[in-house]
Amino acid sequence: MSTSNGFTWIDGTLVDLAPDECERLLGTHAVGRIAWNGPAAPTVLPVNFIVADSEIWFRTTARSSLSREIDDLPVTFQVDEVDEFTRSGWSVQVHGTAHIVYDAARLPRTWPGIETWPAGAHALHVVIEQREITGRRLLPS
Image (cartoon, rainbow, N blue to C red):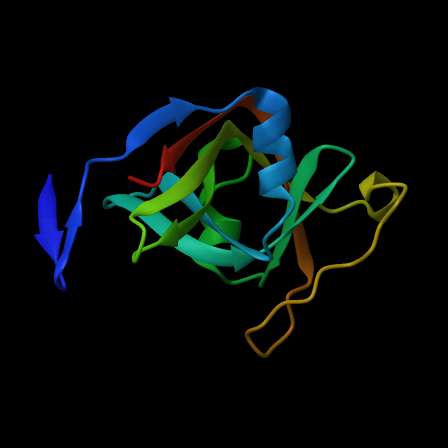
C-alpha cells in the first residue's frame, strides 16, 4: 500500500498475457522501441512501426545506427501503455531477429506502408522475424 497525491493505493496485480492478446495489443500502437546490443552498449530507440502478416515492420535511413548494427542480429521490440493515475498498464515484448529488406518483393502482401514521424528519407525497410512474444498486464489496484 502506498499514498500519492492524497490517494491510498493498494499494490496492483501483475498477470501474464496470452500470446494472442500480446499480438492484439502490439497492433494498437504506432510507436514502439527496438533494442539491440550495439558496439558500445545496449541501445534502445523509438520507431514508427506496423504489424503486417504477423511481422513487425519499420523503416530507417541508410546511414542510421539501425541499418549498420541490426541486420540479421537478435533484437527485442517493446510496446507498452501506462496509466500513471491508476498505476496500471501493459507491456508486450517480441524477441526475434531483425532483417533489412532490400527486395520490394519481400514486402507483405497487404502492405499498408509506414508513416514515419521524423523528416527525411527512410528508404530501408526492416522486418523482425518473431521468435517469442510475451506480455504482462498490471491491473489497477
